[in-house]
Image (cartoon, rainbow, N blue to C red):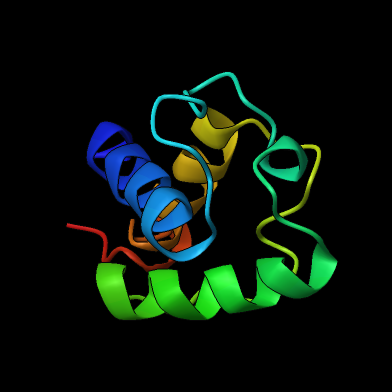
Length: 87
């Protein structure tokens, strides 16, 4: 799932934040992708729309690589063990 989220994240950076195509990959820090703290809020809102899941403030931060950000975003859509009914 995080590979699909990574693709959406990179596409959003390229199409909405003027990140040059091919300049962002899984190892690129968010802060190096032309995203400042204000843009992180906007990025979170755009990703909420594209991924269909809420992105709470603080999930994304400039020091994360795009892979780490994608994993954090993918985890938002996963059920938490405590919320899973026991058999």
